[in-house]
Image (cartoon, rainbow, N blue to C red; front, side, top):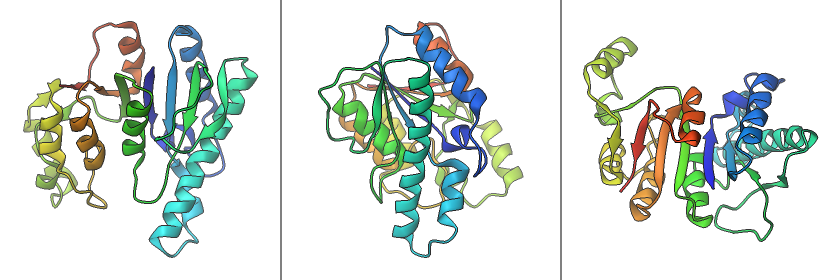
Length: 232
């Protein structure tokens, strides 16, 4: 099984719309690779931000954010059902629980407050004994620098520093933990949530592909691709 995580903005670019073009591309992808099984985790996107506007506490924001991810996932499930593909009809909610039904495609969103979708993605990999996880990113390679070193820089300074930093095509789980740490820091942009990285370190048989969306099919086809692989 391939576990694939998409950012919510790919599904829900505005609070009142879905990217139908993306959904059509996703349908064609799973059709083309009908011999492979997929667990797809989606974020909340613009819908999440809209739903959180009226919330006042962090817990409330977390809960409605999780609900937004599940609304997005359910919408895509319905589109895939209309395409007559073998998709599990409900949004999975608990990444620690396996299910007995055997389908080609499953969908999930958030889990519970305090757990990012990165962590949820890795938990599903463990539960389903998946050895490949794809995290769709907006950058091509993880750079060999701790996000903490970039935290207080201006946008221009950050971009300059990143341009001067070597890219990592292959890295170990220990290296990922060394880069992102083991504690989640709100607002800090990391290539992987620290708790997800720590889980990967505990399950080194999982290979994580951090790649741009256009590289997904190359990974599925076993071809050369651009991106970072985390394993061992």
